[in-house]
Length: 102
Image (spheres, rainbow, N blue to C red):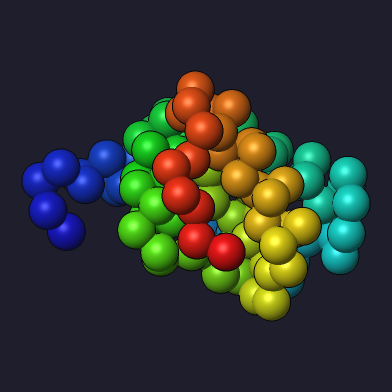
């Protein structure tokens, strides 16, 4: 871990990584999105996580099977499901994702 990523050690997810497995969430819809958001809503480094996730997605590294920055990324995410997660991310970082990978 580099010095500019030490913030990760303060993440809400650091205590129970299994809770952030997208398989632990309801299968679809609003309940899934709400549960993902609740997992991250009070995280002290939510903004840092969102910015890092945006950089990862913009460079082609798409999260898979996890909850990151308040959004669930499916194991076999269709474009529609990714779009929902991307919208959450864009709200947090205050800008559209630049060339998100499909």
